[in-house]
Image (cartoon, rainbow, N blue to C red; front, side, top):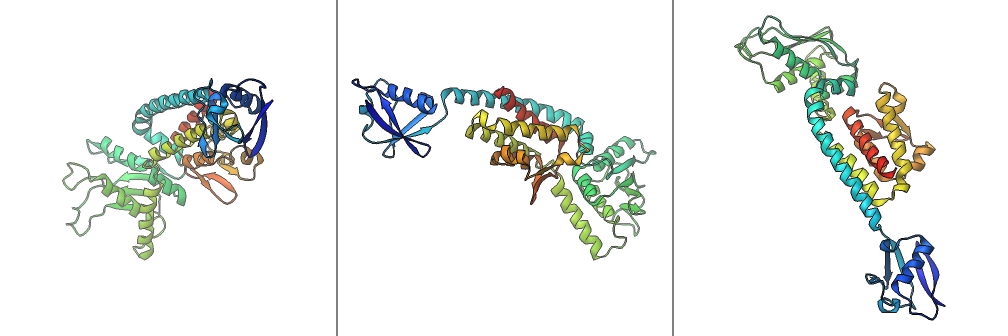
Amino acid sequence: MTTIDVQFKGETHSIALTKDTIVTVAELQVQIESRFNVQPDAQRLFQKRRRVDCSDVTLPLADVCDCTSSLLLMAGASAAQIEDMKVTQDAMKKEMKIRESRRVVNIEKKNQAFVAQEAVSTTYRFHVIEPLKQFADADKAREILEKLANDRGILAVMAKYKWSVGVLAEMPPDGKVGVDPVCVLGLNQNKGQKILLRLRTDDFLGFRKFLSIKKVIFHELSHNVHSEHDSKFYQLMRLIEKECNELDWTSSHGDRERRIHDAVRHLQVHYNADTIAKAVSLLHKIISNIITHPADAKFRSIKKANRLFEGQVARFPECLEFLLALGFEDQSDKFVLVREDPALLWIGRSTLEVLLSAAA
């Protein structure tokens, strides 16, 4: 009886081979599959730091390696596993293309106001829009005010400071900007009861640049706290503008979506489907609960000490990156969803559903 030592996962095993016949590469592969449950096309054999060429399985084993020295076995991906991963990746790419086309229409153009409202708050926002009705293009003025009212950065700042403004209104265009001694571009009445903004140019023929109007709203929001134009006022105004740009997650939406898909792809490449099945299922449940119960804070927080989470999700770095890409923040004892974006939540859940359907 011929034996050969095979090292696998840090342990050395003696494999018995056929007696009185020439042992072939194929016979060794059969014995390895029987012993370690590693398919022949996934077997990677090494000896003396060099890979053993097993491309021709009919060759005698002695022709491709030294049978008196031990072999190192490493398990790679089988052809079937590689094909499964390719099928799943192709399905994900197809899903991404579909969602990209839908997002351009449904989110960025048609549902911008709806998404912003869902993403931040129904309390800390501008509640009424009032353009000047005497102008023929009052609809255009309303559009500008609504764009400001639904700006994700502005909404995020208002939610952070818990500011609720009753009315966002158009201000009558009295005086000429930079010419008349009294020419007001904005006004905050009663610290947030009503904010008025000058939208029109001096000649009444058009509207001021949107970014210029937006800077005025930073000024007026600062009056929710400070009445006088002192150093504290201007410090807050600069902070509001900075935070508005940082908290506007629209600009980083594409990067976060890429991180979501990268995390899922890495899960597929580095682990088999059975290993990650429970992690993917739990992540899907976490996101579904948030989408189904958007007002319930308990679903936005995941304790690190939770045994289910710790055992099934936290042990995979890719799963934690997936949560961070969705908008979760890694705090001392828990993960908390601090950057809410319904579009990303839907993308994250649908990406996981592709994995779940592939494993079914």
